[in-house]
Amino acid sequence: MAEELNERAELEALSKEEILDCFEGALFEHVTEGEEMPELAELTIALGLKGFVNAKLAHREKDELIDLFLGGDKAIVELIDHAAEQGLLEE
Image (cartoon, rainbow, N blue to C red; front, side, top):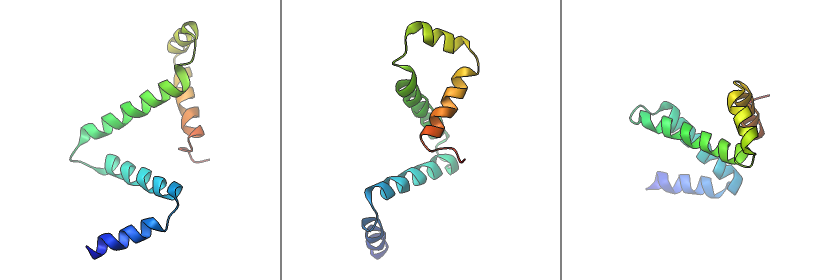
């Protein structure tokens, strides 16, 4: 109980953005290091890909999507660019 109170006090001292960063880090650690739920990693990947498709591709015209789909590595480059925009890649 005392440990939970200390942890709560530490979190209350943080800004909302800092708490969200903590969430992201804790979830990443749980997904990448957790052996008890390997399907959680697959779910996380699918969620990230769905977010990418919705954020970066859904607004495009059908012909542009077909060209991108057939363009091989072009979609991967766009995925990496999106990751960089989200601050997920170190410079």
